[in-house]
Image 1 (spheres, rainbow, N blue to C red):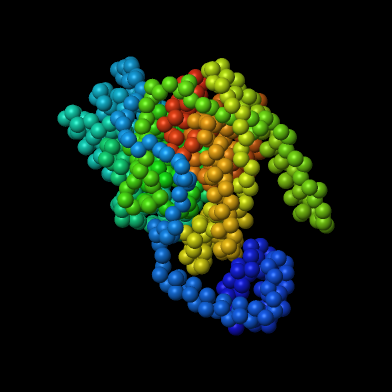
Image 2: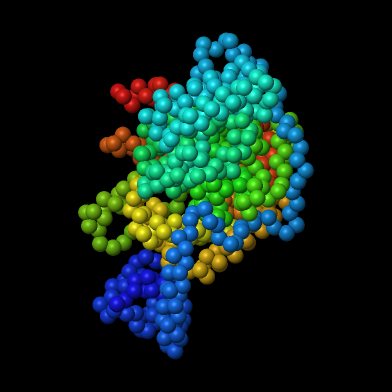
Length: 619
């Protein structure tokens, strides 16, 4: 009886990563009940891996033992929380970082008169810095803030679908504790008493941790993630576990699709979908998200929040779902730049468990002179270039195929129209920076095939959820398209180990080039969705994403499906963003520069009209 797993192992060892070709070979081999030497020869020729006839018998004999070895490892039932023995380290020889930790230096306390507000909801969109001052001076209690944000979460969740689990009992207990301590003069710092939300890949004892995925709806992990423990220690109050796309992909989870507060007909993007949506909607003071390849940048852009993706190895991931051990990063999603600095200050540093975390200092100083920073910008990325025409499509044209071709053409036209419209925001950003007195130094993105290295993420993700694929439980996941995890995990099982190593070697070359790029720069300004997004997630460099304007009523409108969902990006009234990059562990400088830009533009002070959006949806 021919063993399918053994057959696929042959294909994998030969470097056959296409799903089609192994399938064809399987169809040829199954009637004979075995893979013949001739079949291996044909496969080897196509894969450009010459294997002489005398070696093929030995190869088949060894593969059977390999299969038995795989089975022994499967029997261990390794959980998602167990990392591999290797550790990704973005730090290269010769790099030096600040290790002496200094006291937090916040901006000057804002002048706030709470008695002028009609009700507590008037502070819903306040920044962390503003809320902290209200709580510190006891003008607003933690209990009042907590009750207000819980009420808003309940009110707007039916429209925006950003909550998986409210942590009400825990929140009330922590808020009461915070008020007692503050009243007794035991103030812990700027997060004390502030309600926050956690992306539901962070474990919280006593509450389910669903990872947003079908099949995991009732999963309980009996521990608090390190980030949760540290925010508890800062006095912050967890009010909700927020949505993420299933297993950290997109904005669709087992309960529906998380929506964009600026346009509830549109998804909030992902995978930190709920964290960005709830923050933008004024339903938490701040939130924690995660990024592997755009999961803070994308929803922060869509929802108009300020997101910080820290350097790889700055914030411990203990107690967080693993997707890619060499790329996962946890970071804050807030309404203002300084908020992200205050949150990062509370959660960074080694915890003795996540071995990838380095003992470096993050010294936030809101008063640093940002004018002394050396600032580059990716000149080519800021220039509008019409998209290249795709190759002419050939082959028989059935009515169904013709329909697909026309839809692809319409999609290309829509994307091009949005890019052309959005160019004004790139131009305005450069103009504004120059008006601020910034001397922008033109630089280029190092030339490396970053897209080809995405296989690293997919291979690691497939390993993290290996049992899901082998057991067939991947059918429980909400999304099942060719671009979703179930299919990606299956494809990844055919990635040769040699090619995984080769991609890592290419990654090392990229790291060296980015190290050289930052030798004479403190900050690089970039469009958010440019080559840098994949590149810096691979190299581990930090990024802060800030709102950079709002599309006008003349913006191209994405087509609306029959179910009321906008099929695409953009649209009137929606935000755009700008990204600021830094060298490894250069968060303090890029945040100082980002704060200066944000203070000069004030895009972060604009908020969505949720009640109007609710009325529009009901009409």
